[in-house]
Amino acid sequence: MTIDFKEVDRAQISIGKHWTHAKPPDRPGEAGEAPAPAPPPERPKVLAAAPAMAVKPRSYEFKRAARPSIPTSDMLTGLEIRLSDIHIIENGVTAFGPFGKTANLYLLSISVDDLGGGPQAVTVKGFPGVKDDEHLLVDSSAYYWKAVKKNDRTPGQIRLLATIIKSREGIRDIGNALVQLQKRDDYQTIVRSILSAAAPGAPAVEQALFSMANLVGTVLGRIEDKPLYTTSLSFTDIHGDFDELGEHRTVHSTDKAEVAVSLTVRDVGRATD
Image (cartoon, rainbow, N blue to C red; front, side, top):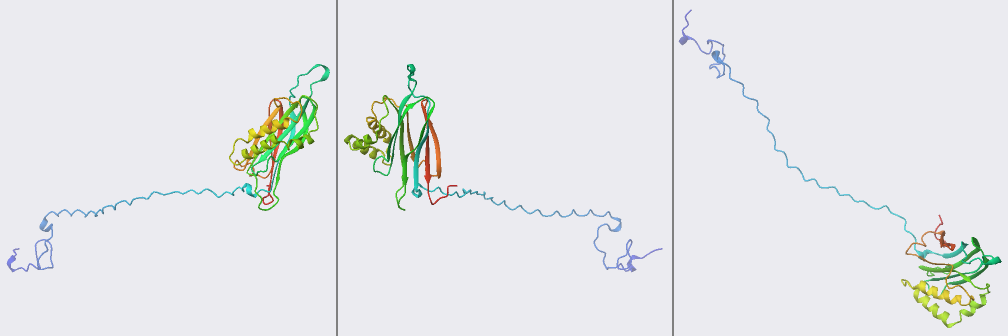
């Protein structure tokens, strides 16, 4: 069969595939040609990473928990210092013959505060025939202060000197002797030195108290030059001695004697617990 291509409508007949269009499309792979490779798939566009934001460092703030304030000494309504339970460990006497080993002892205490007005208390107690390892029946007030008016000034500092002196003779009644001693010029001179030394911030009050002790010793008769026991104590509001209410007991001892000292703090505006 012979086909004349000039008389054939190319829109209808063609070698190979049958096209319905007037002109065959320009497609790859026609007339037995190898198909063109498929175009590579488009790669997704990679967006540029956004610049990292600067990280602001965290700030931490710690606040101390609120604590109840400690009332100051201006709120106090009463203070007392007591000497008690005096234990004579060794009375300082050398045993001689059949007379035994006993000693005649005086307990002297002097206290002063920063309110002015001289020593608050000068106390002397005598104890005859004291043996080693003996307890003296003492529970006496060495300092006492009580508010009378609402706006009374309260002590900010209290100094206490307590000493045990051995007598070379019998214990004498020194009540009247102390009264007469307070009228002497040398006593008044020492009182003035105590007042100046007891002012706030003055450190020399102990020396003034010792001078007073030596003066009081002159009315006790023949006494030993070296005391059997001596303690000098200081109580201040800055140190916090008056912060806690109630009784606070401490023991002060040497190789010769032991003395219990009690500080009692009172305030009607605060509970004792």
